[in-house]
Length: 152
Image (cartoon, rainbow, N blue to C red; front, side, top):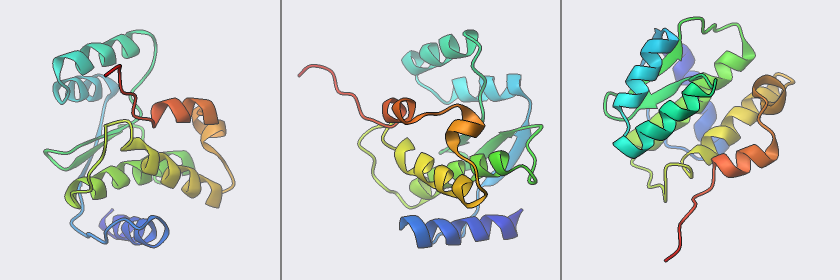
C-alpha cells in the first residue's frame, strides 16, 4: 500500500498542487457499523446528529479520513482492483494532504471540493465518472462542496 500511496501523492502534487508530503496515513478496512460509529465519534454533537439522520435514511459511509489519528477508513470490502474503490482512496488522500500540509479551509464542505475534483479526474483516467460510479451529478457536487453561511 505504501508504494501506491506514494504514487497517489505524486499524482495529486503534480495535478492539483497539493504538497508532496510522503508521511502516509494509516489505512484501515472496517465494517460499515464500525465506520459509522467512528465517524460519529469524530463529529461534534450537531454534526453527529445530522450524520446519524443521513445514515438512518439509507445512506452508507463510503469512507472517511480522521484528521487526529491521520487514518483513512475504508469499507472492509474495498478492493484495489476496483477503479471506483481506488478513487475513494484518492479522495481521502486529498484530505490527508490538506491535514498534514495545514492547508486552510473556509469550511468543512469547501474541503470536499478539491477531493471530489481529484476523484473525478482519477475516474476519468479509467473511463468512468462520479455520476456513473456514485450517482453524484454536478448539482449534488455543487451543494456538497460549497460553504453555506447563514444570515449575518
